[in-house]
Image (cartoon, rainbow, N blue to C red):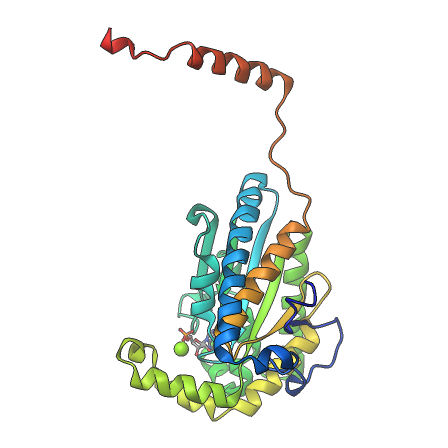
Length: 306
Ligand code: AMP
Ligand code: MG
């Protein structure tokens, strides 16, 4: 990313003690662009997203043909952070055959029959695919930390909720990701970082706009009351689980278009870093191609019309 396009996503270096307040949610780092006003930012970001989408489509084609890797994108964020919109806008224009989106809500009774990572294992993108987890196993070290009573209903062995229980979950997540990377899964983890004020605006808009009302859940408001706790647990998550092979990116998300173009940009960058190629054509195939071309070129007329 050059300076012109840099507007401030940050990857979290391994072991960094993260304080979310140090990461902006808007465009504070780019005052020049901020001064141009919201309209100009949106215009720029939309153009940039269109370019990135085209680049992504080309990169995805090669990725799909190469079939040695899969790409797993993890999206986390507070309610209204823009996860659904990001998926819709970033993935539009991609070959649907090579895409897979999985959304994870409160674990079902059946899912609770298995270790917590089970439902993620079975939802992984196949080789050549780009898979998005709309929420993920990071919810398992987030929501029940803030509402420990959730664990009481999960039929867990004794000791759940203790420090060593949480340590074990973090260890499981880190080794799960390591195992995936060892096997050709590229992992990108995005946190859509919005401000408390922006969430208020979006919730109000959700309540007032008929086409958005269905999205409203009363838990959106009750969870908002725990905002500070959520931010703290997220800080712990980023501090503990950002690794060189599966880094967290904290994306300023108060401007939806900006967040979307940054995500598309980072996906393109990560695919381009791979040594991808179309399958090589063997000498025998070359001869076959020549022969096939010659045959087709010599049979212009439909024999049925003779
Ligand atoms: P939504 O993304 O709006 O459909 O909401 C899904 C809800 O499921 C959110 O409130 C999540 O926090 C919640 N959720 C997802 N995974 C878990 C989990 N492992 N434990 C508890 N709640 C979860
Ligand atoms: Mg919701």
